[in-house]
Length: 198
Image (cartoon, rainbow, N blue to C red; front, side, top):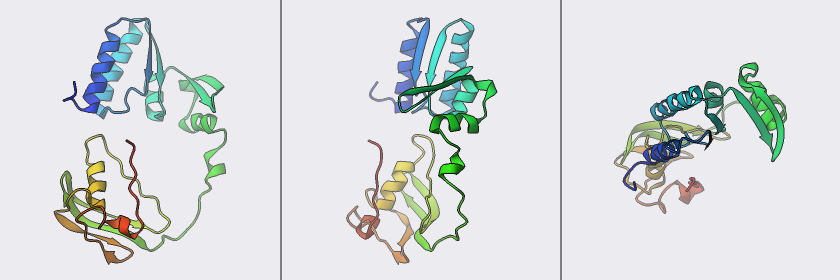
């Protein structure tokens, strides 16, 4: 099983659990490592199990999944029970409000702020698993990088940081070109840090 991708390993684990024919199945973040296609396959299985009369506890922080697959939702905050509701009676905003205990705009008011100067600029970056990536990061901005497992997010950061070789493209930090042959040469030399979940 070690040769399988993490998503495939997760599907094997789910299949093993389902083979026990339990009356109640608890799934804790089952789609964490799955692609959209694998998630849809899992949801078909869950719907079939529901039609057979099995009960399923589905733990997830993903709103889309809660609204797609669940009938009821129980909300906890800081280890305390907050509420149980029918999913059909909720909106995504009302569910998030129960989860965090306040309206989101109360915590994060909209700020009308002019974009800052360009801090990091990446042009046509290529390397192992990375093909022609360009983006800019401005001072005071948070830039999200998203994609499925295996989409190249980690490889992008490793090429950017110098842990993987850059085959072409340009990286500038505060207007100065960054040439990377190793992490010691990368943007980290100029106060950038690369963190990732182990």
